Image (tube, rainbow, N blue to C red; front, side, top):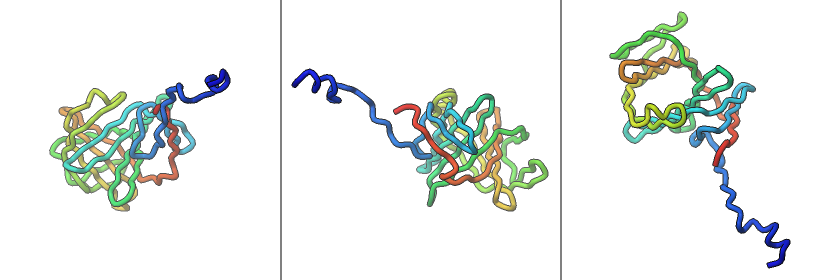
Length: 170
């Protein structure tokens, strides 16, 4: 092998191959562009309830945090959520009121979670959850119980074309 062959050979280089990102395999450190804003993925939660699995990604830009929810049901379902202050206690009620709108419980369950990044402190825990939907089926309220703390988020569906994912790691 000549000098130039060795110099320009890719044989010895250990460049990791980057996996193409989809809403179902986003990693901490990736960048998600939504509504013309670039967010860094700083946390990821994988939920498992029986054989069903879904993901929540914590997106951060400056001091603005959003959550991107992704699940594969019959088709890919995506939602964008923001945490809100709404007092909710266990057992979860049949209906919730938020900003003058009524939300009706659509599903409820318990999921084991795997947390990564900023969410690693909940790794291995179990969360009780409930999903609520507005009468017009345009807005959702997500409620999660983490021991004595209950977190509430409000969101809506988005389409896959509304986000762009840039891999920040392999």
